[in-house]
Image 1 (cartoon, rainbow, N blue to C red):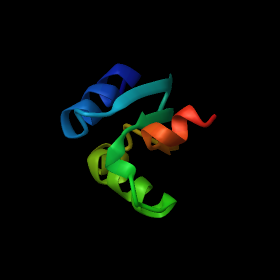
Image 2: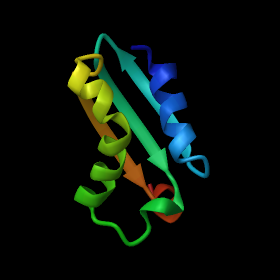
Image 3: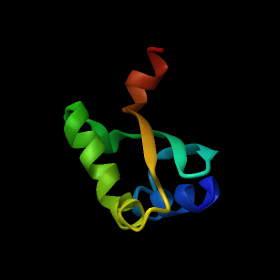
Image 4: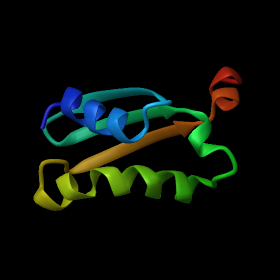
Length: 78
């Protein structure tokens, strides 16, 4: 699975977010910035992304995902 395919999957479910996916060979870094994460702890944020990608993780197309998940204000504070 290509990183652009993963990005498009995430955009379809999180259209209001800024999304970047890097990597290949089953290992990816996913960065998602958006207000959808407001009020959610790190685990809940990850669960929301895993829910979108789970079918591809189970199939083996995605082996490892590192996530950077932030609200707009959190991303500006970096």
